Length: 270
Image (cartoon, rainbow, N blue to C red; front, top):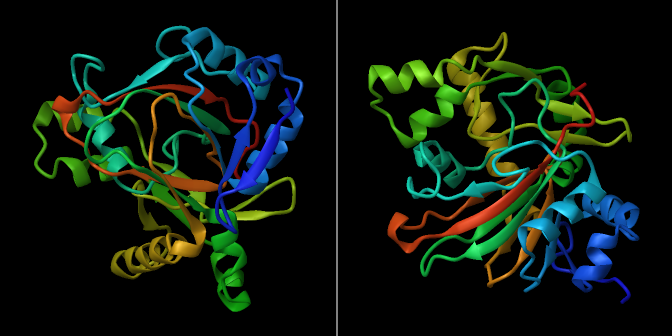
């Protein structure tokens, strides 16, 4: 079967229409990777991939991180599905995956297994486009700035009064410093923001946080954002190096469950 595409918004999001056999064969992997980096998020409706099919497809895109069950990681805030799942509530806020790692991962796939009746829509913001539209004089300033990203900082959005045990766990992941602007090998630039971004190095704390808030608001304007309202069996792929994302809150008892694969980092921040 051929692979066809439909743009979902002018600046971000493309739907791919194909069948499972074509997708997992890898015949179009180079095209999909290129489209992913140009459009930020790709949508395949109603495929209902099983674990093996999702993994096979993910391996055509790059090296899969060995998370969960053979590379399949369960995304659920239900502790019965995902022990210690409280930290996943940080996904209710705009973020880049792996921002507290040395290098954020390249991409990820998310496969809808069980949907919640309420909430659960996922939003993606194109941080390439957000950077491109900034005034030139601001770009020159931002290109020189570095930001401290902290796992503890994002968890305090979810749990502002942690126990000493919880705090000790958060602090096992030390803060990381990343450029505010990711200068990619391709020559393109994207903003590195999100709820992990605690402060700007060398800047007054209040002033730095005001700047990070301003840039988050700038980057999540409607022209840069795609909202995905999930249907059973949907598969999403996103470029984690050029987008932020978040999910609408949903109740634990509604059993929302996603299967995720993560494509390892391929390019250091510069």
